[in-house]
Length: 356
Ligand code: MRU
Image: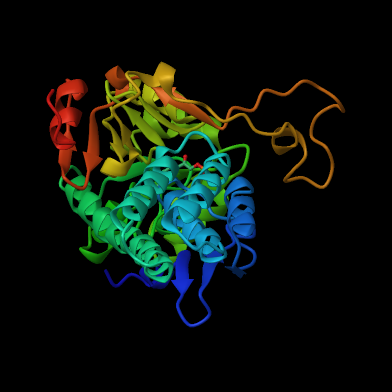
């Protein structure tokens, strides 16, 4: 992909200095600051405070976090190292609860640790570094494949609506829900994209509108409560969103506000597509009821982005960061291995190589 946004790598290891380089997403679009992290505590903090965010990017950062943490461990035997690995894994797992990619990446690092059990400590540390690199590299290819599959569902000239940010900075590169938009941009599809601002943390306004504008895509920013009018006015032919966890029955957790969009899309007869890598599918969650939903601080709703408080002091605030979209509202789930349609229990299990 040659779009300028593809040049940005929001999460990567600087090999010369052996530090994790992260684009601080809390400062966008006003400042483009790359952080250099060398400890597991810094990685935890970056995930917790959304300096790195988006399900795949969180998983990649956590994998590098394991490497940076294990690198500091002084151990003489595999058993000693494995004990410390477990502590680092649990610590990183406590940073955010909803995106299963975090736990998927930690498990993958643990599997690699176990595979290397008969190697020297130095070799194990090197293997963990390689595994984190592989996770990042694979994610680029996964996103491109999702982009191709999703593009096959879209037609030139369509209006598209997206929520939150499932773009290049939420992944190793290219994004999930935004990947078909970037591919379409290269192939003269001339999409018009409506980006929901995505209250309360404004990932749509700060990140998606910025990314798409940088790539030269025709993007229009709307407040979340304007989605209905743009759909009613016939401006939207498909909704594309990313996802933090897909349950076995096809229920999907994504940024708060996503399920409302799916209800609207059903009302207006607009297809609703969820784009997600297989690493976001969690067959151990039978339905969306099993997906843990992160609750975040009240300040995010009332004061964080404003000079003055926008709500009376001490008013009660409810701030779930994600919601679950019922599978009945989803037209298709687009993965790197292909497109899953209802009944999702069967199609997702097949894509995951499990019995339906
Ligand atoms: O709280 P965030 O900003 O990490 O939430 C991110 C989302 O909800 C994304 O849509 C999702 O992680 C998919 S990113 C490809």
